[in-house]
Image (tube, rainbow, N blue to C red; front, side, top):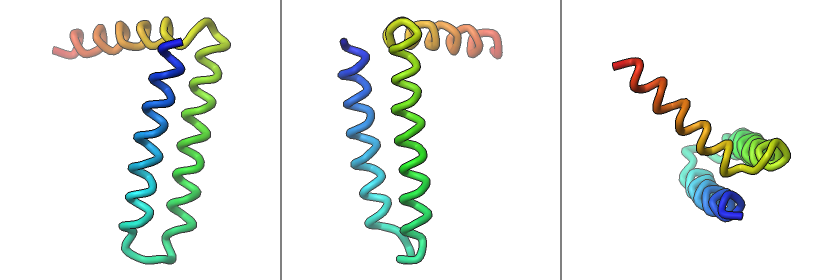
Length: 77
């Protein structure tokens, strides 16, 4: 359940930042491209969460990802 709450928090922060970027764009002609990119990123985030839940819970996958990244980073030093 905490994975879903974390996902909602991340999505909310991402959407707020995306709206800020859309309002601060240099030219109005870039708006459709920025909206396309934001839409693709939101879709990717939702798909990743859905796949994580189907595979066996997002929390376990998140912990496995963190262990993997810690191992990669420790080997690089």
